[in-house]
Amino acid sequence: MTGILIIAHAPLASALKACAAHTFPDCAATLEVLDVAPNLPVEDIEAQARVLLARVRQPEALVLTDVFGATPCNVAQRLADGMTVKVVAGVNVPMLWRSLCYQGEPLDALVARAVAGATQGVMQVATARPQNQAQNVGLRTGHDQAEHHHQQ
Image (cartoon, rainbow, N blue to C red; front, side, top):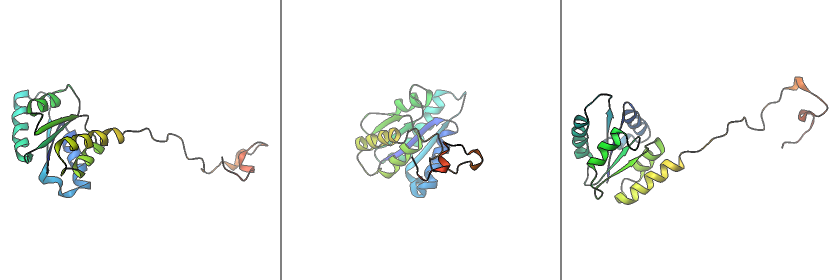
């Protein structure tokens, strides 16, 4: 089973772990998080990340970060060897949940599932009310649809 480490700007990593624990209460053994606080030296962040990675690596690990090019991602890239530790940036809840569901798959397959979960979980949702909403009966006119007994 592949371990997962989330490295993100504070408090995102801890918040994502709370979401994971809410849905997958048994994930604690294979999920660690590191909240990157402002003004923390990069060397300290990397040292903490290495300790956490050692806890979850079994022997493979997936490191999820929030923003490509930011400190958490840069630290994660230093940890990755491309073989047993891989990094995916842009972590969101669907990505995390998908990763937790498929931890038993090989690392490359897990990376693909994580990316798919992230992208498939982002969508625009309806911004208008449903069409079968209650109508205001005080505004009846000759062309008011309230007088007709059909729906569009």
